[in-house]
Structures are given as C-alpha cells and as structure tokens.
Image (cartoon, rainbow, N blue to C red; front, side, top):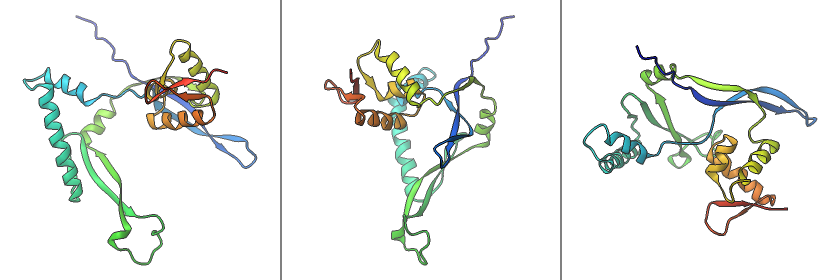
Length: 206
C-alpha cells in the first residue's frame, strides 16, 4: 500500500503584541498570529485550473465571472443579500456618517455604506476546522525596525529594486501595510522611488 503523503500546514508567524503605558514602557498585551507572506491566487490562475477540469476555456471562465461580478454588485445595490453557494453570504453593511451617531433624527443623507460583510456557510466553517498550521514559535514583531532592516539588507544584497509585494513577503504583512511602511521609509530617506518604473524602490546608500 502506498504511503500517504502528509499535507503541509499553512505557514504562520506568531509575535507578541504590546500595549504602551504612560511612561513609554510596553507591556505584553497578547500573541498575534498571521499567515506568512502575501501571496494570493489570481483570477487568471483559477480560470486556468478550472479549464483543465472541463471543456470551458480560461476566457470562458473569466467571462462568466465578470458577469457574476456585475450581478453581485447589482444585488448589493438593491439591498439584497447574495448567497454564494457553499461559500456563504455577502450582505451590505450601512451606518451613519461621522458626527451623526448622537443626532436626534436621521435622514437618508446621513446614511452611508460601511462595507460588505461575508458570513461563511456551515460547510465552509466545517472545512476551516480541518485546516492545519505550522509555526516556529514566537518571534519579534515582523515590522520592527531591526527585523525590517535585516530583511532589507539581505534582500538588497542580491536585488537592486524593491516592490510592495517584495516588502510584504519579506515582512509577512499585507500589501496595504507594506505600502504605508515603504512611504514612511521614503519620507525618512531610507528608500527612494526608482526612476525606471513606477512602484519600484531603491535603497538609499549612505
């Protein structure tokens, strides 16, 4: 009988979170665990994979998805909830505009969309319970100055240009966090925007 190959778990990074006190001292608040890296599966990759399982071409899959997107947005605009099969349900979240939370009366002009909430189905929740994870213990905060400096020094030893995705992968953070952190480093004079292409950065050599 062939031996079953053990499926590797999702790589995670754990680090302590701190709460700053009035005297500038930090106390441990808890432990935060994040999925490592910021890699994501693109629509074109899923379309390619789906096309291998049936007669539809990647273009067919993308065309159907584009139509689904339009229908989902149309349903949300109508205030309806959108059931996505075994995945779950999308629904629109609304609330009052800033400064209106204590108003005595509310009109339609005071209401705005706050976002879209996803409620996973029972089947998806059950599947999540079967996920496995890998973690190598608690490390320092991935965005601390020391860890960022070490990661960038190692990266620029073999690369000339840094992208937002590179930074997110190096520091195990989201791309939005990476953009904010890069902007801070540009303002500090540690990184500079590359002249060859938009979205690339170079290390400022001292």
